[in-house]
Length: 236
Image (cartoon, rainbow, N blue to C red; front, top):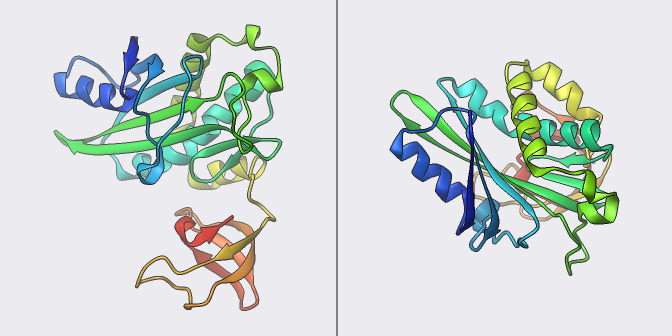
């Protein structure tokens, strides 16, 4: 399982997809760069990165839908665990794809998958802020501690090891692990309808996040009791 370095690219996610197409890589391969010109986040948002940020895509292959569904929470737990265990940085995970320190965003995760030749080819893109950005909502590793102690290869390889350690764990175990770093637990949120199939009434209302189901829908205490919602129905 190797690490592939590309000095400049549009997106490590795109480069990972190209590698899958060549069939010259294996599950566990990591693609990383120091200059990403067209990074992207969830829902086609632009991911703003600087040349010093830690930017990589972890490539994972599985034949089971269960492991595919777990890939999001396992990625979040793995990165939070590595930052805590290796560098003493306590990060809280905001389901499904962000890491927060002091109520500011430190990293983001994007997951894309394709079914090919009887298996899922999963690309897990990660962007970690290294130096301070001109954004009030973000925080960087340099603002948290001594960045001279952080080695990007060590961090990426440690993430891979932790991911393979956790991916076989059951949902109850993963959920229990996540509860200890849950950024959203107990927070008041606004609920809104996002589609014709939404469980929400037309008018927005508020609730408090109290947990998650085994398929990672969000449990929210509202005036009507504890209700279940998709993450996309929640406004923070």
